[in-house]
Length: 175
Image (tube, rainbow, N blue to C red):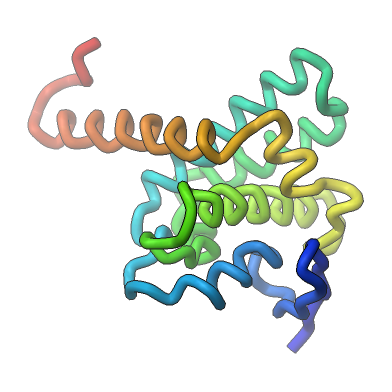
């Protein structure tokens, strides 16, 4: 099995090369075995988080806090993940326990890592090449988990409720 090494402030971890998540997610998997329910069971929530990251990337591009080449890679990765036929494929890489510690930090970092690694792969780089696209420095630029997580939740809630209303026979969600 092919592996890659990733580093953080706590040290080095060797990860299987297949997953799109990175060292922060691996630490969450190791530390937060609380329930048998994973964020991957909620693809609409993942969609909300990815849409939030995409919007933040557009904002960072507009104000010049992220180079256009990196922003384009991140936006491309978000679009790839959000494709209806791909969303289920990528949700498996969100193994965070729904009862993870903190205020969504593990889920936020999981999202950053998946987006970064998809961006890298789409552009011909190996996963984990964070010198090109970094989960925190680029994907999470100018964001706080305390902002990104509840925003992603609200976006997901909008999509969930709109789908529910459509299933009930209404044309769209009232404004």
